[in-house]
Length: 332
Image (cartoon, rainbow, N blue to C red; front, side):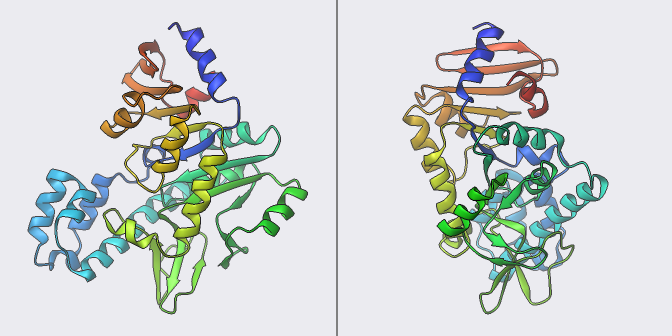
């Protein structure tokens, strides 16, 4: 397939305002930490060093990666709590470092993407993400949109999960709205010992007597999501997948059971999906390229001057770095 034909297929797939899926790869280019960096920070903790299975855990992290190490090694409950704290602290520091350096210029490519999707009626974009960081919120602010995350308020936000009345009010007000469904929690979410859930934007430290509401890597994420706000957030994400006509995945590896079931079910019915990735994961290949999906494009880094594109029954190398969002937006 020549380049002009490829662009034509792409534009046809994404003509109906795609739902955006952001994975960790979408954040790393802005300085957010990889799993490898999180593992190195975890190894430095005195509390974790004191765990009886610390050495086994370190070996597992080196050989299997952080998530599989947490799943395969039995760790003390206090060790798992410390891992959550370290993950929050490390991601939050990197997030705020980006914000402090770019307070008035949020992620330009993400902001441009939102602007493109919001421009036509009905003035709405939907993001589903496994990330904890605030890059999606920064980008929504840049385009003057109202963010819907499940929390309402200005500085001290209370849990107010979406309902028909709230959605109707926003529709009538003609607001530019970006739904951001964070299925693994957010840096801004916290829970008190009595179960009270609240959101505090841009906090630099974990507030006294509160615990971060993020689900760290590992099998805990599948049990924790039975509780609020995760349960409703995931339900909203699932509904968004069903309602959307197309999907644009950025830096997502297709390794998460909270996002995938509804997404894979929809694309198996013929809805188009476009994936931007530096390196295609084996899970992405399994679920997209080798799965008999009818309408898909995967843009992958080939080398410093080329992009490899996979489609239904074909693959081709093209000049340019179109797996990068800022370049991709030039052809969409």
